[in-house]
Image (cartoon, rainbow, N blue to C red; front, side, top):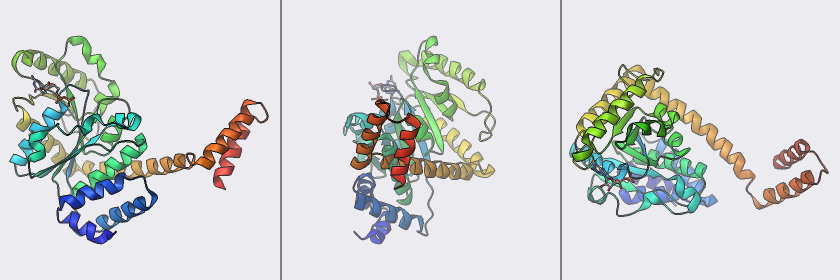
Length: 326
Ligand code: GDP
């Protein structure tokens, strides 16, 4: 494969090359991995030095993520922006199926020539999903997209992963009765830069306004973060169906990003994220060494010995680590 010409085509905004490159980084084959690494390096050395705004978006199924992304994506392309949508779907790591991969989602946006939608890769472990998504974000950035939206379902670890690859993290919520505030884990609230209470329309409007006020109150109780200007993180209402609140939401995002760019927090966070992913990749690489058939067999053999009381657990672990070091 001609990596340099692929990098060139991606930088020229060629979608087919971008799609092929994402397929390449998603591949588990060792030779593909080498090509993918070479491609990422080639892109890092390109003169364009493009920077997209990377926006993470999380919310439980049914809050309206796809409806919102479609509406917000169309709003952004209407402003003349090029928008890429990527999905990080932790369920695909377990089941091999992808709930965010449904082709019928975001039909209008997918027909928009200024938009690019990529469903999440299936059949890989969570660490793998994270790395691939992060590389896909970089590819979209190199391809000249202005905004990269990274969507995830609100379960478990996936928010942390997405927050670690985004400049801005949005939490999408639905209007709720008062007791549901506790349903959102504190850790996830703390990650959010902007909470969007969706479905602020029709009969749900007043409930949405109330929910928004509740969350605004809860956000005020959180410790102030150095990367936030006055008034952030904040909660606001939107309606993805009626396409209201999108402009205000975008303007708040721009305010936040602008402030972070001026104060150095934007670059600082990206550097921090690069270090985070470096450490994660090392960790995952080490774990992958345990997954080879030979290593598994050695693990089983030593575990038997430990179980039978032939050697203590700690000695077994030492023996295994020694085996891995060769
Ligand atoms: P996702 O699972 O988070 O991607 O949610 P969807 O976008 O598929 O939306 C789930 C349901 O909520 C659908 O029936 C949507 O029509 C509905 N929905 C999404 N956004 C809104 C909104 O702004 N207002 C109202 N009333 N319904 C909405």
